[in-house]
Amino acid sequence: MLPAVSLALRSRRRQPVPWAELASLSGLPPKRLAEAVEALGRRGFVIESHPHLGLSLVNVPPDLDEAEIAWALPVRRVGQRVTCVETTTSTNDLAWEAAEKEADASDGLAVFADHQSAGRGRRGSRWLAPRGTSILCSVVLWVPQGAAGAALLTRTAAIAAAEAVEDQSDLAVGIKWPNDLVVEDRKVGGILVEARHQPRDVGPVVIGVGINCSQRPEAFPPGIRPRVASLAMLAAEVDRTLLARSLLVRLDQVLARTGGAGGAARARDEAARRCRTLGRWLSVVEGGTPYAGQVVDLDAEYGLVLRLPDGTLRRFPAMTTHVVSDGADPGQSTGKTAENRGRT
Image (cartoon, rainbow, N blue to C red):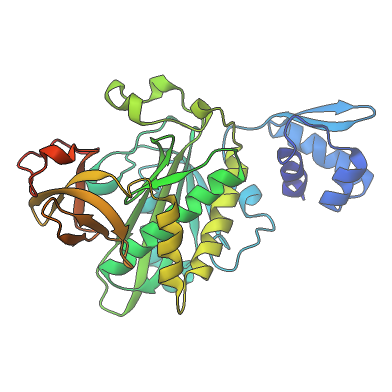
């Protein structure tokens, strides 16, 4: 029952919780509750006791704990099984190993790590984060195969991650197409959905989510510091365990409400409301050819719809389109741009 006590204290961090309320929340009688508080202290929780006010959580262990994340989690699919590791090459790697060994029994498995030695982002970029400063999570889903499905899951995961951050902070989170979470136009997280060809109609897809939580500016390479941030840098101190729980609950909810008839349209509308790319001028590369235009819409499969300078509309699929610059001057655009300015 330790998770019941620790989660009750986490939810009221630095605010006293009366003993009677804590007993009610945990379902423990006074003696067992006192024993649980002592056990949490041995695990590294710093808890202050106030004679009249109750207990206050001052500090928590630095690592994620799968029992805490999974405890009484209100989910139907995502997060019914949770695994936490201290370090790995990539949580996506561990998720793929589970999918290959356990087949569809791995559906909904969530893997968390405190550190990744070879975390990866979209198009081969690296995801770097000091130990214990981020949410690093991968979820296995068994779904109908196809590139469009991976694009739709990118949108779904981005919506869920944005909602989870908002659950645990006062920040307003947007989506920078196709896979970045942004606050005040600075990247705070990203999504990487990986699908592998399967000889059958249904197979595994791995959704990777990274969210910057407590990094300081010096944790990021100087060249990208103006464009990235952690939640702490934006004055949002979040508890990683509570954020991990919110992420799984929100992903489970978004998958449920965007499935079935009309689900893709609902997901499209939700993503469009958060999309910080709508209305902007972009330079993109699709199929090896560069283009520039204004983003006017997201299509049902999460592709961009650009209005090119000659007035024509062109669709750019999420899985095959690479954004190379953001906010181009429309007066300098000629329909196709000859310069690839590098990845943003």
